[in-house]
Length: 138
Image (cartoon, rainbow, N blue to C red; front, side, top):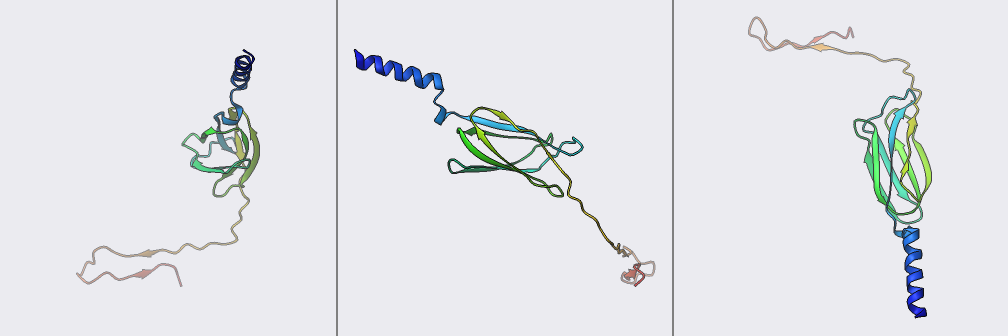
């Protein structure tokens, strides 16, 4: 009788805690820039720190990303996009989590640039092969 009572108590305890070590969670959110405009196709990667697990994805057209079927534990998540500063967060995941992130533009300055153009006629009037004309002034 005592053995059955202990089994029932243990089962109820595990059910009330939701099997935390084996629980499946998700992390999702939207990626924007410093002007609150969506950032589509940005690279998002996540790495489990408390257990070995890696996954990567891209944000969709609406800047949305999602990782599901994650175990409870500690994760490191990276947000990257060309021309923007990379953001990295460490989170302790124990329930479904929403993480909206804003990336800052990287300051780039061009000192000088040159534009070169060449024209190639498709057809010569006199039937001769096309001649290259240098319009760069060099």
